[in-house]
Length: 406
Image (cartoon, rainbow, N blue to C red; front, side, top):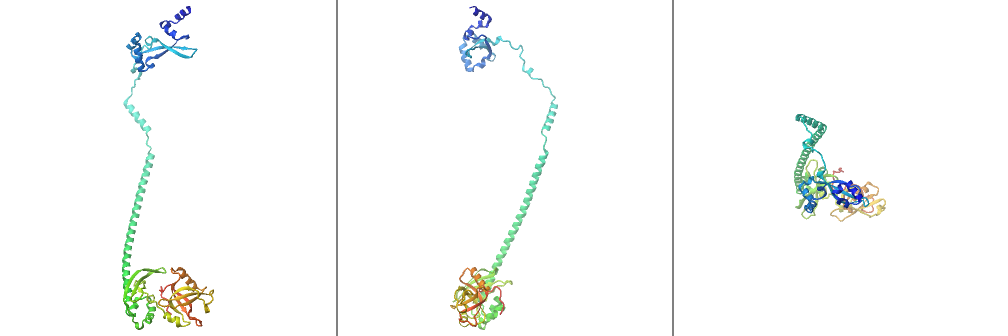
């Protein structure tokens, strides 16, 4: 009993709230903690607490004071054995605690600030100028780049404009040239057609001679071909000027297909010489031969070279003095409007053989080629069917250039 009385005397607060000591046994020294009531519970908890305590005098006092100022000490009884908080009991009200005697106002917390407005603006201007110095070098660099780009663009535009004008001028010149070339071609075709028809309508050597190629060389040939100088006139059934013809890289020939009454269609070659006046190739038109082919095969003069327009093809008839195939090459020779054939021979190591071999390899029709050959019948021949090929005069039946007169 004495121990309890001494403990109550030593701790007068326990007398005011004896239930606290009974709720926390084993605590030798109480621990006071200041805890705001408004922070311990939510609004819903405060309302529930208010309903539970409105019948007590403490609740009436709580309702009379503002919630923000309501604070109280809580006594925590800590068990040393268990190391946990077992309960809390309000001990001291906030109204019993001394605080500051004087609460300072807002005006006293804010320091007075007095400054000259003009000086402030001047200082602001200095600070702004010092912080925002202009980088004039970059502006100059950008300006130079822009000026260079503008100059380059203008230069390119000028060059493009100049090039466009040059291209346009060249195109106009080409168009004019093409138009002029077309006009010249039309005039040329008209002139070629006129000369060719005039030649075909000629009734004498005198009328035809001014219209033929190589008139000096051809005149005696024409006079021998047309006894009395009269040219028979045959009505033309068909005439067609086909196109220009390139012969050995020479583009000054035209070719026409002509068919006369009771005759097969033949080709008429027309040359445009440097004088610009078309001329007809009379020799290829009549397939001129120094003597009739059949007569030459039957009774041609031995040892006399003659130029013939023949069709040549490779053959293998080796006989009599031309029996050795290692020494001689054989060619079968024929001509138009005749069924007779001769066999011409050339040595295998001669330029004549190499030229004929080249013509065969370059020809579209490899089996036969039209050529002008100089032929000669051997004097002491054992057969008149075998002749010597002395020269290849032309790879076609047209002389591009007039051969020398014999």
